[in-house]
Length: 415
Image (tube, rainbow, N blue to C red; front, top):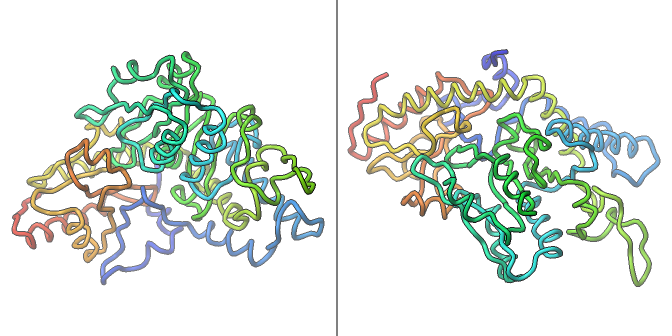
């Protein structure tokens, strides 16, 4: 099935608006995606029709809210190929999911001298929690480097994943380079040495078919808002036996089985990790975004983005003084193109593009070690999703040409 972007765009009310008198061209999807009307309606429906706290009431609204909330958990499990809904813990975002593992698993099972393997392309969310834990516990962090094509260095994978490795925490898809990492190969090597594997799936789950059993990962973290869903909803997938062994991340109501004055016992997983009233309405609305993507088919989402990347790179390569980062092959990367243009700071470029109605991201993208590795302070980043179409690149190029004129760097881009 080919994705019909013209039809899809009709589902997104925000795409009808103008920015500075220009039609909105939204190319900042790696930061967050826009929401279709069905997701907006689902959120309104919760507050309009069955707003109630969950798991605690026996009245009709509470039972309906609980049913919708738990149905979303099952839908998430199905979407990523998890064996059971009890593998799914709801959090606020990918960052909280990773911190949950660092605190609830890492603090309990890691000790001085143990090693955690990461990469130089990690988002800060999959770096800083491990830095803090390493200082607290006396752990050693090892970093797989990247080559000039933005791919992980195979020799480093062999070198750093060894007998002292207890965890490999790595991004499935880079939020800057778009690199899709060979995570199943990494998981195989890690498991050979008795180590666990955590995947940062913030970019991969929204853009690729992902099956946790095929990838053989132990943990997977991702967010609803990057896949057409509401903000404030994150997911942690974990093998059930790990969740059983881990201590609670937060404590209070809902995550308990019995409370006495001097001690308490914990609820079953996954509720052991969901203290207090959760983000019920947004979780229920997340269900609609999962349905939307499932109806499109993740294989089709992936194919559409490969086409967009190919066309974007073809157009951008005609810009004099441009440097494009990451794998050359669109088949090796997700729907992200990071670039710099000589004599134009990314922030200046982003500002000019905004005046043309084009939204990109400019900065270090919460990946400062990667910026250092690339020997830059920042990049521009255009990122795509199901509602983007190649004709939008006309506005992108037009804005780049305007920035070049403004900063005295003439550009002749051609077609």
